Image 1 (cartoon, rainbow, N blue to C red):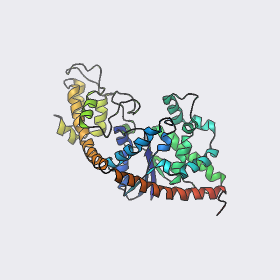
Image 2 (tube, rainbow, N blue to C red):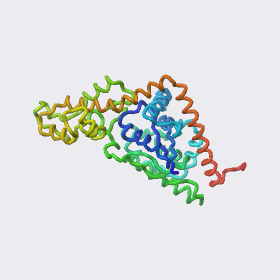
Image 3 (cartoon, rainbow, N blue to C red):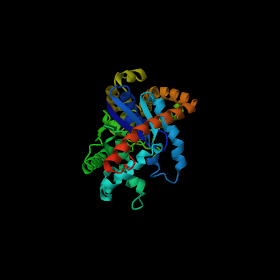
Image 4 (spheres, rainbow, N blue to C red):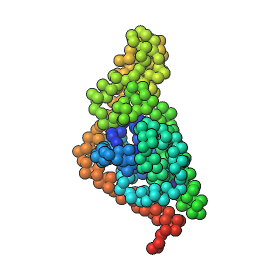
Length: 345
C-alpha cells in the first residue's frame, strides 16, 4: 500500500479553495483500499509566521479538525494528528538541516514567493526559511509516497527528494523514501480564485467562502462576486473568461444541477446566453448560490454534530497523534542507526 501525507496550517477556518484543492480529494482517496493516509494539522509550521500569536494557532487546531470531519474525512480510515505533538519530527528536522545549504533554501521558488507575500524581506525568521526541511521531516517520517499539493508546492517536493537522496547517499543506506506530488484532476481546482477575482482564495485577503459559513453569509458573498465590470445592463454582452461566477460554476456544477436551478440545459448554454446578452449577473449568482448550498448543507450538518460532541473530536486527535508517533519513532530510530548515533542500542 502507498502512503499519503497531507495537511493544513491551523491559522483559520478552511474554505472552498481547500475543499476543491485537497479536502474533496482526500475523502475520495480514503475510500480506496490501496492507501494509508496521514492528515497533519501543521501547528508547528503555522508558528513560523505566527510566533507572536500562538493563541490564534491553538484555537484553530480544533477548527481545522472540525472542518476535516465535517467534509467526511473518516478517522477510522485516516490518521488525523497534531504536528507539534510528534516530537520525532523536530528531531528529524534537526538532522536534515545538515544536508541542505542556506543558498538552496533561499532559491526555493515557493519560499521566495511566500517571503515576498508576507513582507519578511531581510527579517526572515529562521523557522520560516527552513520549513522545507521541516516538511521533509514530515514526509519522510511516514515514508509517504504521495503528497497531494497544488502546482505552487512542487518545489517543496523537489527539495524534499533532494534531501532524501543526500541522506541515503551520505549514510549509504536506503532508509528514506522519495515522494511524488498528487495534483488535483481539475486544473482550476488547484487554485480557486477569490471572490474579488484575485488569483487565489486566501484567508489573509478575506476573499473566501468558508466551509463553516451559514447560508446567509454564503448568499451575501456570492452576490458580491466579481463578474464582468462591463456587463452593466442585462442586455449587455458579457465576458465569461475571468468571470469568477462562471469559474466557480465550472468547478462545482454539472448539467443536472444547471437544469435544476436555471432555465438552461447546460452550463455551456448558460455561458452562450451570457455572452450574447440578456442574462443578468443576479441570475447566474443565484444559480451558483443554490449549487454551493448543495455542497455546504451536508457539511454544516456534520459540523453541528461534532461541535456538540467536541470531546469526541479531541479523542480522535489524541488517538491519531499516538498512532503517528509510533510510525515516526520507527523512522527516527532507522535514521539515527544510519547516521551512527544510536549509542545505547
